[in-house]
Image (cartoon, rainbow, N blue to C red; front, side, top):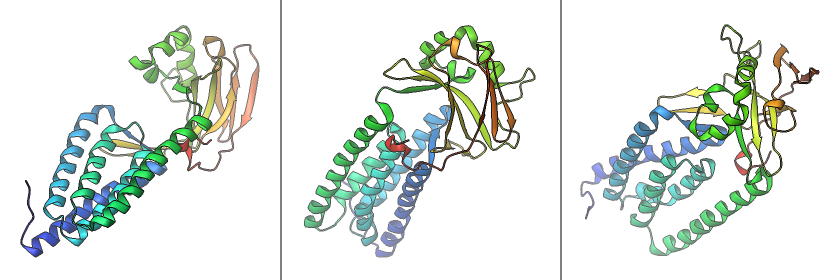
Length: 289
């Protein structure tokens, strides 16, 4: 069993080092509240190994300094901080599991008063259980429990998980590609000033579903070695093309200027829409649009 460190100054230094882990978890929680934190597919294994090892090292340091005041405070503040990380990243288990284990272990092993642990443990349990239930209920009510959105571009449709959607649109792949790119490969989806981007999305829901044309901000991504922070909570629905399928895919979409999109439906009708971007929705993680 791991003991504690006798040298008081070494213990204080290691306890202060433990604050780095709390800071990183706080940064992850804050960043994933404002952005969609997407771990790069080619870096999933690398990120998982580094994150798990770092969590294990810091957990060992917290165990060794569990009687220090700094580590005792960390044991109190880490569980609610990890809860925020969880609700902003539901389904991202690589990010959730290591930090959750660290938070639970350090809460129980820290030398905090037993009565305080019982009271806070009860409160934290209620926060986790009731908070997660609330998030699931709100997503069910506002987000649609069976809604699945798939971008219509070659990269997304080529993913094995989207094989069923590909079958629906395989006969108009060339049309989809010409909507997105010019013959020279220039991305037509980006506005002339480079601040907006449109995209087509197949929407599956409890009804017949539809094909939607959206506009989102462009150029706001923050790229890191293992993951990307993508803008979320800002999206304008320009048009819904009725039912899903090849017959709904427009023949042409083009930016007339930085705030106007013109598109031609398959029946030949040409329509124009002014794009006014909405304010950022900070509660998108609850399914509230």
